[in-house]
Amino acid sequence: MRFHILTLFPDMVEQGLHTSIIGRAVEKGLLAIEAVNIRDYTVDKHKKVDDYPYGGGAGMVMQAEPVYQCYEAVKKKIETKALLSNPGTRKNPRVIYLSPQGKTFNQTMAEEFAQEEDLVFLCGHYEGIDERVLNEVITDYVSIGDYVLTGGELPAMIMIDAISRLVPGVLHNDVSAEFESFQDNLLEYPQYTRPQTYLGMSVPEVLTSGNHQNIDKWRKEQSLAITKANRPDLLEE
Ligand code: 6GU
Image (cartoon, rainbow, N blue to C red):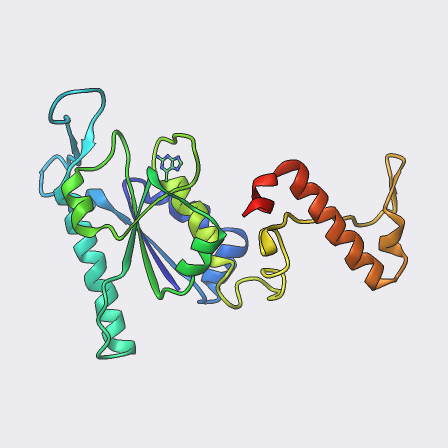
């Protein structure tokens, strides 16, 4: 799977995604993460990427042209790769715009995006991006929750993390992606490791009993109780 991130802050994205599990998956060749600097596609000699909003108001708006040129360059690169690996297939990649106005990201969307060969993320800054280039290139508008951030980079990184761990081979233990939070719309049960007593608190006896039927039953009950207490909305779905 290949991620292409169009951003004014490529270092932020590259640094954040080349560590830990995602970084290892890149080293193994399971994922490719390429941050592309929108500023490299300005035609303006001062490399200006933003301007005042028509109609007035606070802040600056990212101009359409550098974003469009950046997108065209990335699309060409994707097409060249696709023609080499499977000639005859020609489909535009999905292009995700990160914005609080989008649909809220969830596990089902992560599973759907994980089926793609290439994904393009467009990260906005300031007061957003000229609507005309969004109309032209964007296939999916996605938000990560009901709060406002300064830019789309962190949301893109969050989405890439959630999507990547569903790519076969990225997690060591390929069953662990299945038996976890949000499977069956339930939150995860609590986990314990050694020592058996810590700060006077013992590990629940059932977990050291060796009876796997009882352990499964206990975990299921815990999942239900935690979901009921913290996220009753998940049970209603
Ligand atoms: Cl995707 N972008 C920004 N700027 N703020 C957000 C967001 C995205 N999702 C929640 N808040």
